[in-house]
Image (cartoon, rainbow, N blue to C red):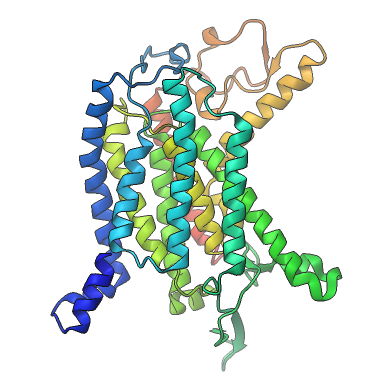
Amino acid sequence: MLYYIFRALENLGIPGSAMWSYISFRSLLALMFGLIISMWFGEYFIKWMKRRNIGETARDTSIDPFGVNKVGVPSMGGIIILVATLVPVLLLGRLRNIYLLLMVVTMAWFGVLGFLDDYIKIFKKNKDGLAGKWKIVGQVIMGFAVGLTLYLSPDAVIRENVESERVGNVTEIVYKSEAVKSTKTTIPFVKENNFDYASIAGWAGKHKQAIGWGIFVLMVIIVTTAVSNGANLNDGMDGMAAGNSAIICIALGILAYVSSHIEYASYLNIMYIPGSQELVIFICAMVGALIGFLWYNAYPAQVFMGDTGSLAIGGVIGVLACIIHKELLVPILCGIFLIESLSVIIQTQVFKFYKRKGRRVRFFKSTPIHDAFRRLDSQLDPTSHFVLRNWPKGAWHESKITTRFWITTILLAALTIITLKIR
């Protein structure tokens, strides 16, 4: 909104209006707005929830060896993150940009999905919340809608990079002049740095491009669903999901910016994606919102984000990675989310396998994996055998676990960016 107002003022020759056309200015402004709104609105939201006695009821305090009681702490704090992200975006973004519109719709959709889950848990007193199958259906629908939009929209295009040799055996990266629809994506640790989904369907002849797009849409669905669920599982300790997500978003913001800048994209030999610079506005607003949310969510938490926040954050991260054709970097960048998800899958499958044999066997002390770090041996089920009973040793304080997970995510984010040059 403000972008268009100041562009109109620029056309009228009003001094200073031109700075609103700079991504750097609007991005930093979005970050500050997101931070301020999150802190300001967060205070009122927490007080409003407490006055109505709307708080957490499903927290299992028995797993905390330090005896911290979190029952009664307001949940659904993801509303704070959504408001603090979307308001700056609507004020500062170019709302005609297809990528920005996709991000707004994605956050709203996943926010509503998470809100329904939190509403059932808190107001209907059903600790299971929204049935898992309906969550998956909602995630798949959004992933399919995003993939289909990227396929059909004439504005969702890239300019393909082409290598050319210069004097002295120096390789220069140049770009085709026309913008095209493409099923290519960035792949880590490979010299050419690009992988074309259509190449999988080489046997299909003239139909291989259509099949390539089908594979791409399927990848969008898988990545969006997986990251959304991973972020949801990671939200189990004060500040855990918010801090990890902020770090991941900063890395994605860097990738989005270099993808939108023809000179940086050329230097890194990645696809140039015109229009993706508006994604930086969204990411900066979201980072500001997450940092502001940490003001209240850091240990000891005054509010929990709930599924309203975690599902929305994960969905946004997954969709953004697909928009800038970096979805194959997600297993590295979102390594913490991946490990959390794998730990739950391993735990469930091992338990089911041995249950059929009449034995109670669990692989980890507890899952998601962050819970295993705060479990004492005395808290374990005496009727079960634990494969990793002696790992980790002892119990860590929640704040230490959270900080070490943040540090791990910082290392993974740095590795993700470095992969653009390691081939």
